[in-house]
Image (tube, rainbow, N blue to C red; front, side):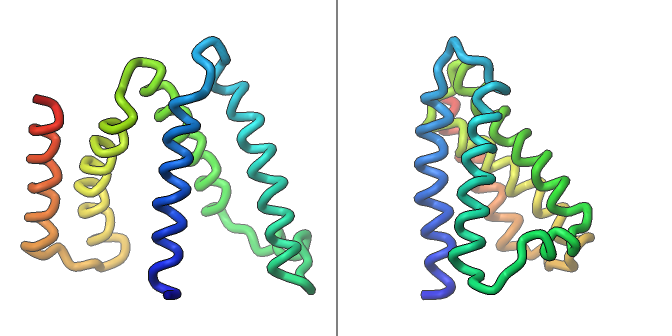
Length: 140
């Protein structure tokens, strides 16, 4: 179960995320909507930290920061702004995520090998080829 629940949470959250990203009002500025998104996210994170770490010290945790959480924040803004603009441009909710996931799989194949010494196997390459072939079927 400890292996499955995180992925189930990601899938559930991603479904809610895609629905909400598609539902941002067309007349609302994307970056203005993001300020609300991140304010709510920060409050939820702080509440969850307090609930899950009874003796934790959030300020003390901030002392452990490196560049990764900062760049993660910047990349999350890019992801969310990109999806919202894609939906405003007319991308269908059923297609946008699949298209980006196929290209992401290809990109991460090349990132995982040099950065994390992950093996590039014939099966992984075949999986990426199948993802890219899927793009052909989605676009036609």
